[in-house]
Length: 58
Ligand SMILES: [Zn+2]
Image 1 (cartoon, rainbow, N blue to C red):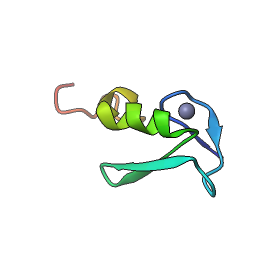
Image 2: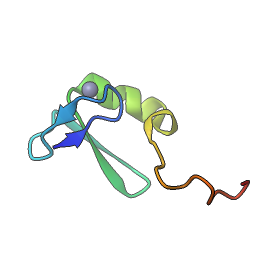
Image 3: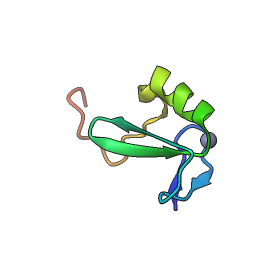
């Protein structure tokens, strides 16, 4: 299972309702409406885990 980045529901990656690619990574969504929200503002939903302290401005 993977997590829908928009609503944080668990999604079966083998049969997601929708998928979208962002910066080379594929995200799975529970519904097309979640994908549409993601596509509008992907940066809002993508959590760059592990980047704390490694950013260009830190
Ligand atoms: Zn969702």
